[in-house]
Length: 330
Ligand code: KG4
Ligand code: ZN
Image 1: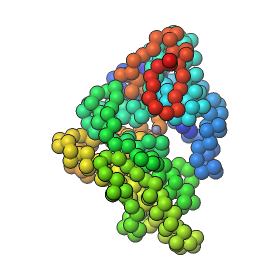
Image 2: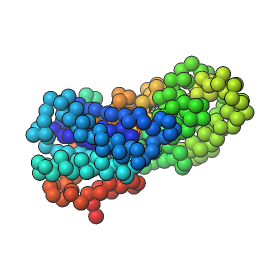
Image 3: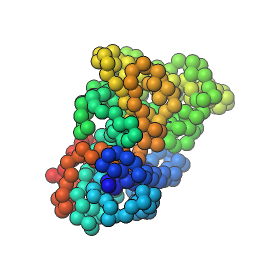
Image 4: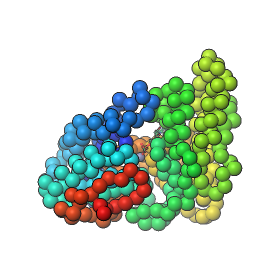
């Protein structure tokens, strides 16, 4: 029984996952206090994690019908993310593990997004290509084993989720912007505005900065009233451009690897239009349910199954990392 914690951004998450990858409980407490700032305020996120984390862990254990005595491994997101937010999860995990002399598995958040695809009931087995698209990262990777991946392409500027969030902000929608913009887009025409898809960026890298600027100019040119009137069309066209920019790189990668299978991960993989486009590719596609695409601890518990465990008390010096990928304390 793996007890997993995830606090890299503004969601306080705990889950109980079995060694076979069954999710017995996955609790996500969204803080909902960052909306008025138009983005996550790191210090506020840390404070809320501190207030919520114990209750969220208790909820997860209760929902799973087990207690700490049943837990054999504690897993936690070590990074990347907001370092103050990560530290709450890391400190809590250390405390829970140390109290029972349990081993601890430090998990990389992006590996977690990949590992959402390894959960029951339909785990995908490597090798496969995977798009990881979240608020902070956008990568196209080749997954050859359960431990890690090889990066084939990455964003040169903004992440896809960040593009959704910034676009939503320009249209006066709340945070997180992806779900709000996507909902508004349902009533709009994706062909109403021709937004750029970074067609000139070669290879498998992504770029979303030009798209965001194009929306900014469109909103300026339309003026306030007309922008409000055309908001659904703007949202649909903007979403279309993000999805097509992602799909263009996926299609290039698949063309270079005939027979390859595809998986998606990260918050943007919850997007309806992206899921539909990927599922229409004509290759085998694995997409986790939306609640396992956005941040959650079940994916961290899943990844932990292949992470080198640190025995007690070795992890007491373990630190969080904001960027990059490190597994152990120095
Ligand atoms: O993976 P995630 O929950 O957190 C990070 O690791 O960043 O991803 C959050 C991002 C946000 O930018 C959010 O706007 C976006 O995923 N997102 C979506 C949708 N749901 C979440 N973007 C588009 N459509 C959605 N349905
Ligand atoms: Zn994430």
